[in-house]
Amino acid sequence: MPTPAQQQIIAVKPIAVPFDGRDVDLQVKVTAPRQGNNLPVIVFSHGNAWSMDGYEPLVDRWAAAGFVVVQPTHLDSRRNAIGFDDPRFQSIWRVRIADLRAVLDHLDQVVGEAGLADRVDLARVALVGHSWGAQTVGALLGARVFDAAGNAEEDFSCEGITAGVLIAATGTGDSLTPFAQEHLSFMRPDYTTMTAPALVIAGDKDQSKMSTRGPEWFLDAYELSPAPKSLMVIPDGEHTLGGIAGEAVSETTDTDGARVALVADAVSAYLLEALDVDTSVWSKFSDEAASERRASFAQKS
Image (cartoon, rainbow, N blue to C red; front, side, top):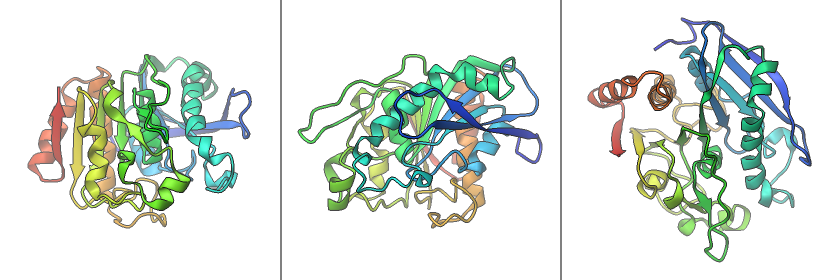
């Protein structure tokens, strides 16, 4: 699989996306290989407080593997200074979902402004998210959010999405810490309705400060959702899985470049197969990674 050292990539930012009534303009970054046509698209949703400028270790590798990657900056980005106590925070989870819908609705305009209009296959689009971004992506794949009374919120699913990947996705809300219950009450996903094909990636040492459960909390997106689903669990992986948000960022507690490459290549392999670009690459990748004990896998067909 190509790496950034083997294939040149380009990036264009910022690109404005139409979004009426949003407090701050919705902007995206587009990263793509310098060569190639009929390129599939990944729309990526970042974790809490990040922005379109994060996750280069993943994004660059995806672009080198032949994807066009579109990264919106969500309203919770630290550059917007909207903290937990801001009255807007409790509805930001909805704005995040609307951000992704806006990007999808204007994807032809976005890739056109990036100079890629004649090189992109808009029929092959997938969603990927990390942490809170994974919950956001899950909503467009069919997951819902329970309210305080235990009722499922509205359906935000997007029929045009072929597949997605949830990296370190929020588990169910029955074990939230008091802090999370107060400030992140929307962290209550219902995965039983997430019907779209997806890969769930988790680290077996990921202990969230938002949950009283252990690393198995991050398996809920796989365990509780209907088939078809795939699961990859990474030994010794913590929440940023070696540093996927960036090299030497403060949130990374398990710095490991090989682990970052493993996550990036797993996403590329899964989506190349899910989007019918290469129907053998995922099975080959998972077999090799399992035999080398770099990860363990499960499948629901």
